[in-house]
Amino acid sequence: MDLNYIFATGNFLQSYRSDLLYFSNFQSFIIDQSNIDLYSKKGEGTFKNFINEYRVARNTDKFKTKELLIATINWLQKNKSIKVDEFAKYLNRNKLTHGKTALSLASKILFLSDPWNIYPYDNQARSALKHKILSYNEYYKSLINFKLENESEIKYALKLINSHVSFVEKDFKNKLFKIELIRENRFVDKILWSIGKNKNNT
Image (tube, rainbow, N blue to C red; front, side, top):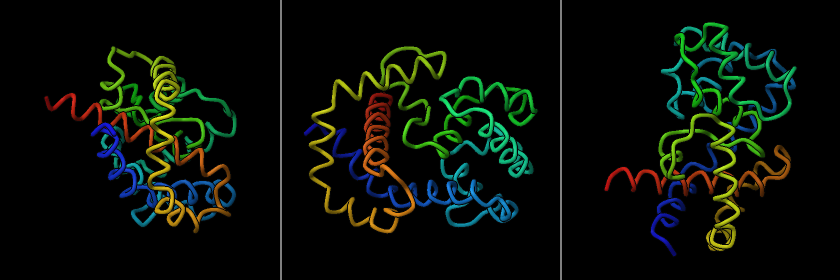
């Protein structure tokens, strides 16, 4: 097995439960938004902790977390498809991203809401895909090609840790549908991150 897959496996296992908690909490929040004040503050599995952990909090004013969350809700009510580029522009128009089009922030927020179809955009993964990518749509196409080209290796690596992953997932089976797809998507992201990190360090 490629060393990048080994590094990705460790990273994946370390963060997978936290990711599932973020996803399930967001799905619950969308149904009942009465706890928006609490969900906007620091705490296990909150929106605030998510943007901090995924290192995109710096792309927005620290005092505007609740406003950012409200803008996200408003966007999701009108947009159901993958429109990360448009969402980034929307956040900028609403003066939530320091006058910049924060593609990484936009992708990670929408990824939080839809981990079945959206992948987080960051420099390490972009570097792993080996060419300049100027939009999320381009990034997404390149990522899907990578996933298809490496499908057998990805499935084999996940099979090796199936018992560990199943143990982590057992508390979320009734909270998240198609959890196997989330699992695969998170692992693909970790592989790209590992490839990009090692590439940039050589």
